[in-house]
Length: 209
Image 1 (spheres, rainbow, N blue to C red):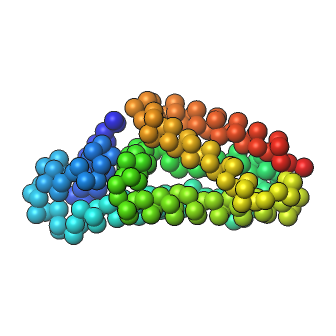
Image 2 (cartoon, rainbow, N blue to C red):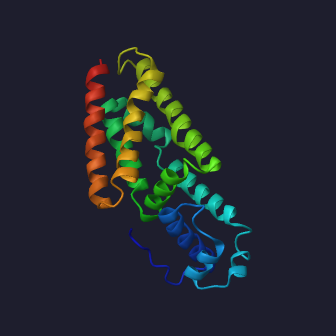
Image 3 (cartoon, rainbow, N blue to C red):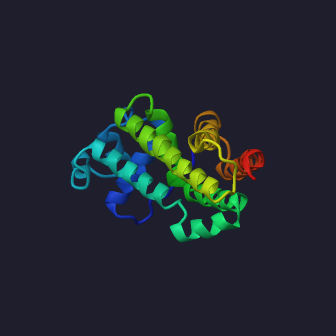
C-alpha cells in the first residue's frame, strides 16, 4: 500500500487522509476514531472539531469521490465535436480522460474502500449501485442512442450496448481493486487503458456502419 505524506496540511485534511488510508486497509468498521486520532497525532476529542462522527468522514470521502467522477466526463461541446469525428475517437478520448481522473493515490484508496465495503456497508452499496452502475449505464445508453441517430453505428438496442461496453469497465475494476490490488498501480492503469481500448475496438468493429 502506498502511503501519502501529510506534510503541513490543515488538521481536517490530515484526518481525511489518515481515515482514507486506514479505511482502505482495514475497512470502515475495522477502524476507530481513537485509531484515526492516534495516527494523525491529535487527541480523540479533537476529531469532533472537524467531523461530527466517523460516518461524517465517510460521507466526505464519498463526496470527494463523486466530485472526481463527475469531472471525468467530457464537456457537452467537446463530446459533440468528438462524436462527429467518429465513435472510435469519442471512445479513445473519453476512456483516457476517465482513466487519468482515477489514476491518483486518493482515488486508488477510495476504489479499494468501495470494493471492501460494498458487502458490509449499506451506504456504500447504494452508492456503488447508483453512482457506479445505474447512472453510468444510463449515460452510455444515451451516448449509443445519439450514435444511432447520427448513423455512426447500427440501430441496435442502446441499453444492451451500454451494458456490453460498461460491463468490461466493471470487470477491470474488480480485476485490479480486488484481485490485483498489490500490484504496481501505474503499470496497471496503462494496461487497463490498453485493455479497454482493445475491447472498445472489438465492440465498435461489430456495430459501426
